[in-house]
Image 1 (cartoon, rainbow, N blue to C red):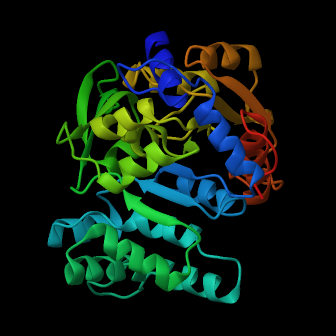
Image 2 (tube, one colour):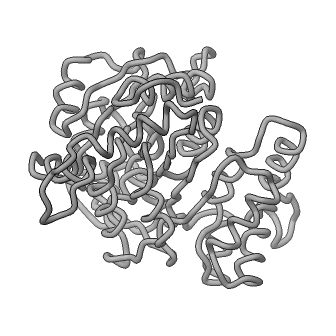
Image 3 (cartoon, rainbow, N blue to C red):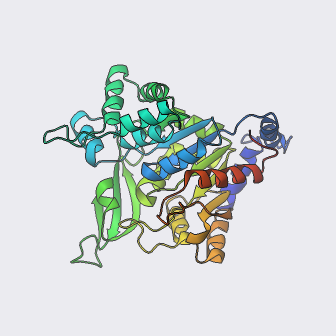
Length: 358
């Protein structure tokens, strides 16, 4: 992993492969100048589902230059039905990201409710979300995933951009021990994100089908151009790790000059990560992307019983740990947008940045 960190460090300093470092602080100075000039940080958030929504709801409070890169392996509910019937990307996680980017004014909150609205009936429309149908309709009208999502974002007044991580619908497969409770020692392949998320067994690893999916070029470009990339929180095996299984997207994460923040979950997730400690989340991430380097691991201070073990696990990625109160005060395992925003803002200010972003 040290070779990867060294390479990324060279790229961060603005050194192209095969060239000498003639200006070791040039890239860092440029970012600092941007900060002093009052420009906002360019932030890319990777994930899916409610975890990504929580991160976006926080990040839109501290920057206006925000891009979400979203998983496209969902095969359940309304998304799964549209995917099966029309052969489209599953729109559900993309819809949730757009809703999270809606503003807090009447316009934003009205549209957030509209696109999240699900029909209730005794017929085929039952369970479909309005936003899913709108997104798919624009895909069919425009024939372009990115253009259609940009248009929906413009309609909503979204505070950021939403992109799929790949232009083809993906199938998530997992190697699971004890998926069949009658055979707890057996390891078998479990297919489909919805099934993986609810398995009673222990997920050993995940992979995508196709195994070498094409990344959306705009997503790769956003990562390469970012100041900060935020990975997580979210369903670890079905929303966070899949980004690391798209080769060109992983390459971009290792080559970008941006700093990388890994945001940990507040609690283990039933089905995917029961009994996981914070450091075990890092261990399984490292098994799927052993060359990935991180800069900061963010965790809720109340969710880390062994801070020394977490710090040691983070060091394996070249990262430091930031502990902060980011959970909602009601005790539920959900992130508070304001507290999470404050934690991200502090990280962006303190780790390699000079002066306020705003």
